[in-house]
Length: 207
Image (tube, rainbow, N blue to C red; front, side, top):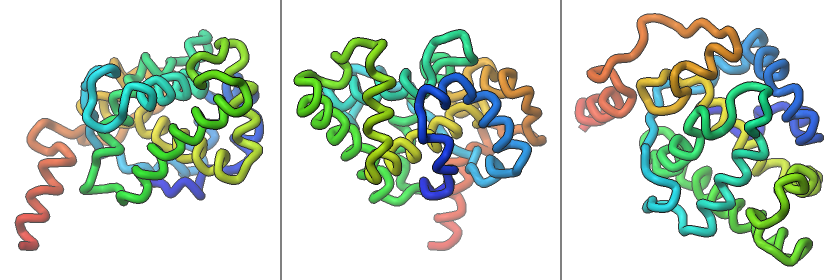
């Protein structure tokens, strides 16, 4: 996984700029080789947004809303829903094979932090802020050190959901690859060579 510190800070200086130019910025990252650091051998849960064992109902709503701010359904490429970003996030923050627990805790704590800030500044939950005002709110959060680091971590996971093999649940119908005109590496993974299977076999060998 890419450490959140490796996301270029200027990508996040303006969420509005990010939304409009995300295809250009992502393709630039691919050409520069930055995306090769993303572990594509990851998996995804298809748990419903209203029923998962990781987040409470409020956290789930904050996560879904944030993802749709970063990858909105605006005609400028696939949305967060199109690539099943929510399902991927639920899997990723449960992954104890490839992610540090503190990284997952940071993501979850950030959901509570964003909502607390919304209540303080807007007197309502983040997901209840009018849709046309949410981008400006996240822009304000990115101006803080904590907020910028948290949104960077969110964007990193969105990269993974966009670029992993559809076998794992994200990048549905190869929408991310098609949008970026990206040719995946070969051979492609199979059910027998899924990330979790390989990792568990390796752990057994070491025991």
